[in-house]
Length: 504
Image (cartoon, rainbow, N blue to C red; front, side):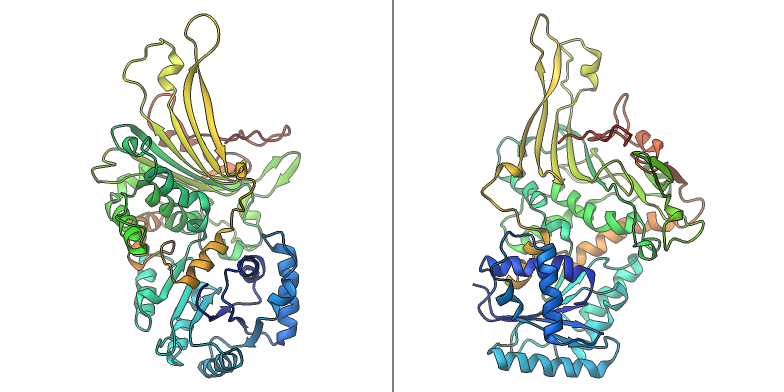
């Protein structure tokens, strides 16, 4: 059982708390993964009573819970409390400290405390500084941990500024930068697939792998997030954090142990080995796009510039694709490709390992030259692993066709797959930082992408390509992958009136 503590959530009336955080904590409670002495304190600006907060969170659990058990909701919400805090007002943090002391005395708790910042990024420096000024960073009466949602900075300069501000009052050990992608079972399973199987790891290098491809596609547009997204874009929103972390786990060397620092040291080494992108590389090896209006299944889909909160004439990218290299012994010369976008044909995130072809095309078929063995790790949805390889078609001759050998997490019918936030919240309670980004990782990722951001902010940096909503992005993206007849893996055809066909 984990240590007793108070779990505080700043931004307790927000959407993330309602949809993800409190339902995740309830799931942990149902599975007896919370300590006997546990208190959740919601913090926000609005005035409300404990009972009002409990009622709101009870409704949220009933609507968004990820576990099929309603039996303990009433007893769980009894552990929930609420206090209003003006986050910009220093004196309110003294009141918060008094409220925490009251709850500790009432429930016989020590000073162990988690501060979850479900807040706008503009408050990531201010709130931890005010907490420290009130003495809430001191660990003389128990551990203190701060959980920070992405984005960790807007660019390299702001990331360095945020780093300095946080480390002025908090130690690296106290900081947990949360990236929900790292909480997904299939992302963690990349390491298990590689390092627990003798059949994969010997092939996981430049001698046998032709290229590595990472795709994160979303079929939806930006919805009501126009105000935020128009200042962010696909590169900041997805590539700098989620996808580079997936690349690092895919490319890392075997850690010496499963200790957090051992794993995170290997992830950092991958970021440090990323070949810097020159101005010429950015022109030829990066593509940015923006979705335009189209008709999908007979219904009109808005273009990005027609969405609420988006500035007229916006040049913010909703699609980003990059080609780059990792300069080390394992991956020297192997191109890595990343793409992500809004309003693509389907929602899918996957890693595709493309193996090199046989050195001799024995069966004389032209299509054999372009056929590659693939290992596909599907992160979402329909999580699983697929291997593609050639087999003889029944009948005379030696006609070859690709066949699939696949496994799905759904096959584990008696095993519940926890939601990403559930796993990460539990790890933060245990003090396990394995799946949280370390300061050096964040800075190294920004150092790699900062030249791209700066180039894309100028008219000459890289053109902005339009692509119709419901398609796989700008057509020019196919030219990013070099080789005759070689292109991205397309798990789904473009949307049409006939619907969409997908495969793992």
